[in-house]
Length: 71
Image: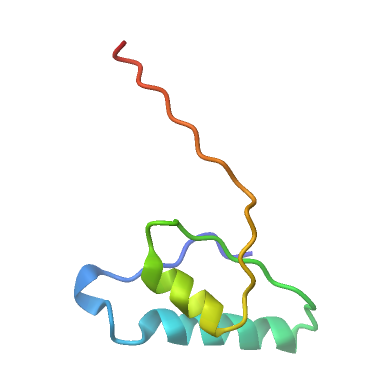
């Protein structure tokens, strides 16, 4: 299990996230893993695009709730 992957703002657009995604997929295949899942924010279109390019299928699986405690 991998909990979090990220790159700094300065490193965006250099292919690091794509390289990490490839490495994770290759590792999973080598381990005989048959399915992998990934999550990212709906406000991260770059990562959504990367996941879609690798054939990940978007599923609605989580709702985010917020409560303002200043009320």
